[in-house]
Length: 116
Image (cartoon, rainbow, N blue to C red):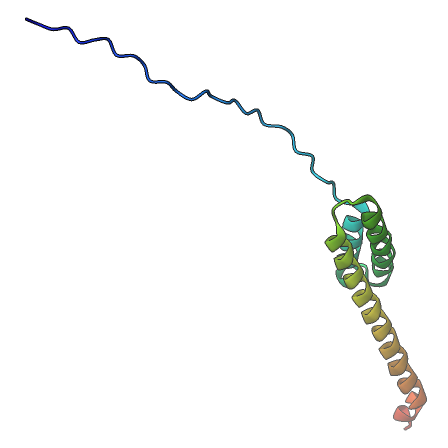
């Protein structure tokens, strides 16, 4: 006497939900903020005075645009401003020191050293 086992019924499963990835909009970075940062770094290294002026001007413009449009780049603009102002300060300091140095040299009368 062999008894046949009753066929197994499949267990009920939860319905599968398929999620398709959606593109998440990413706020773009303000171009003037990037320019301000690059110009600020260049003002400290490659092109001392002119690039620092560019960094300060574009940094202020970028901060204004970021507040108005809600773009990314507030930190970049601030870093550009800081490096720009530091570059301007160092440029003015070097200019003052050079003028003082040459003023002292001229006032000391260099001609007196070569009297024979």
